[in-house]
Amino acid sequence: MDWGMANRMHRMFSPASGNTVMLAVDHGYFMGPTRRLEDARATIAPLVPYADALALTRGLLRHSVDPTTSVPIVLRVSGGSTILKEDLSHEAVTTSMEEAVRLNVSAVALSVFVGAPHEHESLVHLSELVDDAEAAGLPVMAITAVGKELEKRDARYLALACRVSAELGARIVKTYYCDDFSKVVEGCPVPLVVAGGPKLDSDEAALTLARHAIDEGAHGIDMGRNIWQSDHPVAMLKALRAIVHEKATVREALDVLNGSKANPSPRAAVT
Ligand code: R5P
Image (spheres, rainbow, N blue to C red):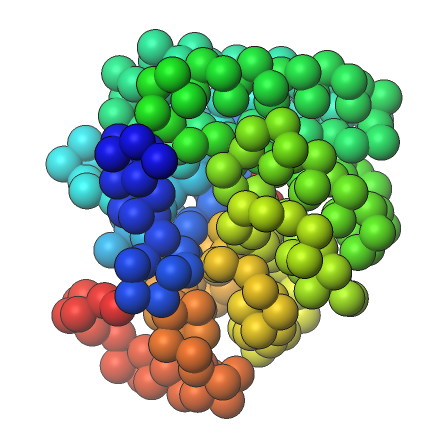
């Protein structure tokens, strides 16, 4: 791996744990002003110190993130459909590699829609993006999107989508946790990170999802709604860090969550 590529990967994935806690705030690119992300700057600012990377679009980056930040940026570069359409798979690459380099990002991300009407286009877009990104020394993160078909999130489907993404050159794949997740991991030769999906019933449920995902081989999370739609987003992110980086049990992570709720403090040392 070339130095630039290796450096970007190591800035996102902790050399100590091998894992990453990415904060996903890219939902607006097809969902609009998602609940509790309406004022993105206000939502993002207190969370950034606890994130290993920030996943978002160029618009939100320019308008809602202070350029003095040192947090690595995973730039979403695909789009073109909104939730008003039944088929969300009609996407294209919406941001050039030149723009990604100008924004000094650490990785670019694109959704692939395996099995959807625009499967072919999304896979060709991934391949072309990999060509451009590799030339620039940037890793590509493929996102195995399911559109509105959340029931697609099973091991057989996700193993297929993740393997295809890796074969086409993605260096990171973002997917969903599912039953038999280890089968998804076994078939994918590059690091997997898991999204949280729609807000779960409790913070504990999201922490449990993360614990299972790491136990079964994920290299981290790229989570959004279960963090910033929580009533205690900073505490939640700290608790997730304990799981992803410190091997905390769900019980221990809940102690971190409750301790942080009771005593919110500025960032001291982040592991
Ligand atoms: C889709 O909107 C994006 O890829 C999100 O970044 C991804 O779904 C992760 O966010 P969440 O944990 O809210 O599902």
